[in-house]
Length: 328
Image (cartoon, rainbow, N blue to C red; front, side, top):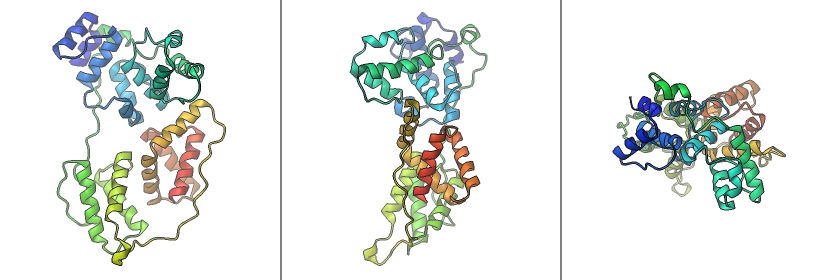
């Protein structure tokens, strides 16, 4: 098994494997092993910085395990660890080595580690040093037992297959080959079934049907695509067709997190990057729950931990709760 072989391989062996697959052979044993596992074993995953940011909580744990390094920690700590393991040499990237880096290098590294990038060089160094200290020993070298016996039959995580057959109401859809095709056909069927416009309840029912059919309408990219498709097919007022709209509810003021520590501010920034995903999840909740039911809302917030949101932290719950009120 390729993964077991990579776990047991020494530097010369890893270089030979890289040469056989026409991959770069540069780097120390740990970084080269990580690169080969990424390219040859976990090639179905997008492990760029943007791809890592989209990984779910359980996916991160499985992927870190496949690399043979520590799997536990908060979701942000695991994303940071995965970036470090894939892109840096643990022996050369240390707290002391940060002094030798330019401000531009530190800015880039801080951004990849999801840290605030404002401030002078010393401020950036301090933030990155905090992460390196927290991650000490958790990345780079794999577990000794894996180097010794290859880990037996290690689990190789595979991304969830994209749903292929979304359906809406009673209109028959052709099986799409891509998620985008499925969204477009589903929206077309929905709008044809509601030529005079639709209410928020109608749209919520459509989203619920899509979710039940296997299309992840709460996923950021799918949610954004679905919203855009609905807007593009909405009846125009000059044609005498209007959406059936409910009276607008007062929109709460912009969310102000107040004074928060640096790691908490990074959590808020992460939520901003996943805004479309959060809004889709809120819309889904509102189709089945009530925003004025505290128990419902708290259960909804708890459920988001399975989607990679650290809702055990109160400032994360507050930010999502505020977004829920705005959507409502």
